[in-house]
Length: 308
Image (cartoon, rainbow, N blue to C red; front, side, top):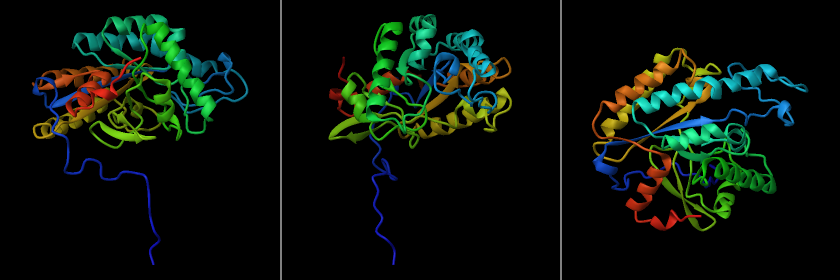
């Protein structure tokens, strides 16, 4: 006899009922670049944290004492990586989403100013670069509030989107709605389109993120070695979604990190991908808040956009 199996997980998604949403100017594909700013937000005993981060160019957590090697690796992102990434995006006229750790922007407020000047969205990536899965409700509520305050202070306006590092807690979405101002989050990896979820009887928009079209695969034996590996994989993904976009809406997310793709031997992969995508007609390079807003308007749910 088979046991009764129930779940609150959704394995079907839209199925055959994909909303008839068209992107602006009838674009075939919405492409969003997420520039993760985590430098200074990583756990570091040198900044008063309880432990050191152990994941960077190598995997080597130093316990009990300050890890100057790890700290130096993260510093590369703001010192050298961000200028290269910024130059590449500006060269192709691409505006994206800066997914920022609150503490990172407090330590590098000039980066927030530059990102806003370039037209990027500043979204929230947590107070520190840490998972929320095991946080108590009070701990998580404080982390969200601190993140909002830090981004508001450095970027000039509060964030509208949220993306926790890796796993959220069961309370995350409810706490985001209680905080106010957030009308989307990116803590899902299960679709190529935005979708609504129920959060305590309220509808909330999710814009799925991607770990495959992501420069993090240069680390921890993730499969990318050369800049061309990143470019080829992203271009293959782009081409398939572009083809599918002739008949249904499609969205592509490219995840970037200052200290990873910003290295001189990798940045060419990003430049190659941007040149390829920009050469095709019917491509909408958009911020995540723009995609979220357009989707909600297209499905008649402008009421979820709200405001602070």
